[in-house]
Each structure stands twice: as structure tokens, then as C-alpha cells.
Length: 251
Image (cartoon, rainbow, N blue to C red; front, side, top):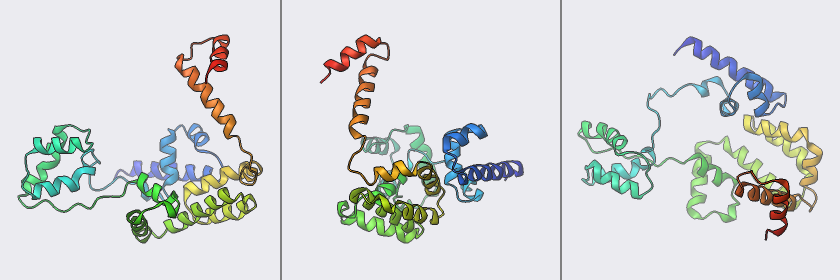
């Protein structure tokens, strides 16, 4: 590992988390440190600098990876024609090239043994969906996947509890519980939740009101989005008078 790169990574990690602890937002941190927002978010989500270390496997993920379970199964069934396998996974949503697939299959072909069984990985998007969905809206398979996820990563149980309690506040308009929820979320130690907590505390009264009152700005935001859509339809070139007429005559 490059010592200079390791030192730089640790310094950035410390700087990002120092600003997060002070309640500074992601965009402000990116501007202050001269970094991209995605980079700042990646550092913020890493609990330690070691979590940012490059993978030792030396291989970047590719578009073939989600289809490896199917490919290895078909390979062991006797289908070793890369062109045919390419057609099959393309029909299943693969958007990469046939050359990428051939490179992926070279190791299996050179090994001369049956392709190893590949366990389908749970994507970040799917894991987030499981954690944020109402338990009554999950079918039996999804409930089982959620239990397996929490069993493999017990730390997520605290996050799941925070999501559930926040959803209850929103549904029951119990904004008076917000301060206790903020303490609960901060105690998890997750940087992303800490960042959310710091942001809410900066505008605590407004968020509390939003979680306590039946009134909201949904209708206003809907009209704002409608106006933006009308403006986009004219590629932003319509004058004020024309835009006004379009809004007044829009359904």
C-alpha cells in the first residue's frame, strides 16, 4: 500500500468527520475541503479509514457480476458457449459487452472444473428497501431476507429500530418524541445517521412542527414541481408572460 495515499486518506477521513461532528453538511464540507460531494459522502459513511482501503482482490466489479449465479449454473449444465450465454443474460437485463462476458468466463474455462456456486448478493438498494418498508408490506421471502440481513450484521438492528420509530412518529404525528429519537439515532454511531441528526437539530422547531401538525407543504411543493415541468417543456426559454399563460391554462 502506498504510505502517502494511506496518510492522505486518514487525514481526509479525520477532516470530514470533524466537520460532520460540528453539524456541517455534505455540500459545505465538499466546498471547504475541495472535494466532490460523492467523495465526501463516501468518507462520511466510513466509520474508520480502514473501511476506505481498496479491495485486496484486485478486481473491480463489473456488469457481469449480478448474472454470475445464472452463468455458473448454466455452465455446469453444459452450456459453455459464450455467445449463447451472452444472448441469455442480455434477455435478462445485461447491458455489458460480449467481450466483457468472455473475459469473465476465461477463468472458469481455464480452471477445467465445475463453476463454483455463487450466492446472489443483496444489493444496497434492496437492503435499504427491506429496512425501510413496513413489516406488513413484506412478503414471506422478503421477511426472511431481512432476518438474514440483521443476523449477518447485528449493527443494522439499531438502524432498523430508528427507521421504525421515525415512521411511527410520522404516522401518529408524535413530534414531541423527536428529541428522544435524535438521541437514539446518535447513539447508533453510524456517520450517516449522525449527519442526519446534526441537520435536524439545526432546524429542530420546524421539523418538530412537521411531525406534529396535520398541515404540510405538500400542495405547495406539488405546484412548484408542476411549474418546473412546464418550464422544462419550453427548455427554459419562455418569457415570463408566456410562462404565466401556460401555467394559468394548464390542467
